Image (cartoon, rainbow, N blue to C red; front, side, top):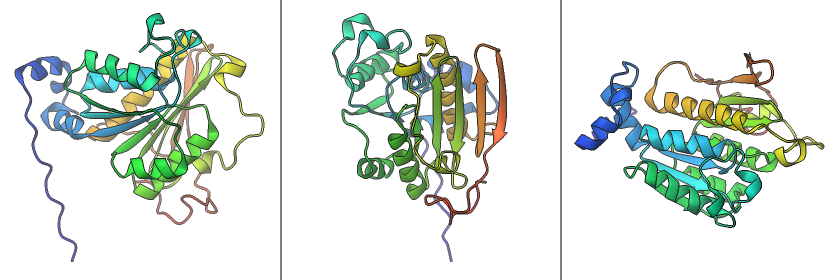
Length: 260
């Protein structure tokens, strides 16, 4: 017989934290229980680029207890047009170390763990054992597939954000379908922001959307984009949501039950 899981251990908030999170605490969908869930949560942000920057800032501001940052890159002047956690003085510095300092300055109640390395299938699997969910904002398909496989193997949700030029997308993957159902193979002519360009404010839109989905998953608020893809067209000022079909032959999730 399966034993019922123990209730989560309550966490305490200082008076300063209560004032800091006051606008969230009054939301019926979050309240005290949701804010406690945020403080207990451990979120891994894969890539401190255009999506990861605003997502990390909003998750830190929201009170996520532990944020993990993984990226092996350094800050370049060409990043500053959209990667708003950095300044010109940070050029040449590690993105994760610089990002950690900015997040701690924004909210000292958040713990930040840094991984100045490129994510691999092995490291992704090890990291996801210690985090509750991953938020992936990279523009590298090998990395996206690696973190997807690690999340599926660990039974942890994945929030995925991507952008280019004037458009972007956000989705949540948990059980089936997974990211590999959406992208079965690495496209031979994959586009990157360096190659095709991107308007900086779009990164803020997609990063904020990804952070919002993570907050919904952690607190149980609303309906996360599980198995759905939100497509945003910045030039048209329009968005639409499409359901992602599960691939029964998917090597990553083909044997798993569908998402709840």
